[in-house]
Length: 270
Image (cartoon, rainbow, N blue to C red; front, side):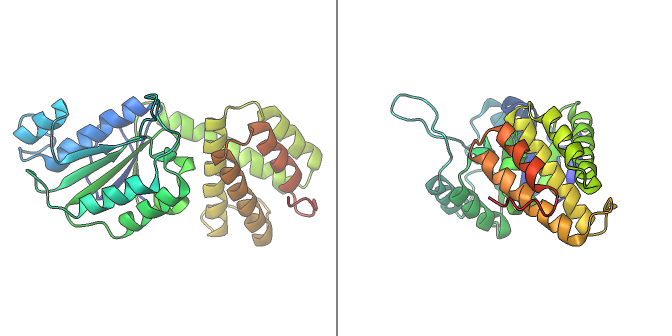
């Protein structure tokens, strides 16, 4: 997965994960990418002057389709994007564009897709129709399946993105060093000092730690003295934590699980 940390570059690939601190910021970036995808003006694109760019900016382009959570009978957004919505999107993506040379689909709050919807999206991203571009906007990419994320170019919007990534990497390294030390007191102390973080940051931390462990298993990062079996066990544990966070399990419970099960031989696998 290619990752781009910039506010200005507007690469156009068939599948892009647009990450930002707020969904409005992600949607703004997605509209710019959509304009670049449909633009017929001179480089650099979007030119913001051609008819396609102007229509995208006004939100009236027929080949830019925005999908998000539906509303219930009281006008409140539903909790999830359903698999039926993604299936409808998939069927529509096979229809030729109305005006432009391709169609752009923007999925707002992509992390709210339920698991069946994400699996349906994965099939679409694996074999995207010619002439279709998919932009997945999210403030919490860790709640998307790793397989979905791996099919997308990732764009991180906002000037603080690099600093946030460094903080998460430092947290992941500190956690793995505590697990590698073999000291339950050290591990418990680290988990206790971080269990107050909010759910979104906890999910980002778990995602970052999983990536770090994956790099260790592949030899791209130092293993800190952890064996392949220990790394595999920790990766499986982090996967469980990520799944629990998607089910809104409390952060304290997650860090309690890390404190108990991160060191091999705890005997607690439930």
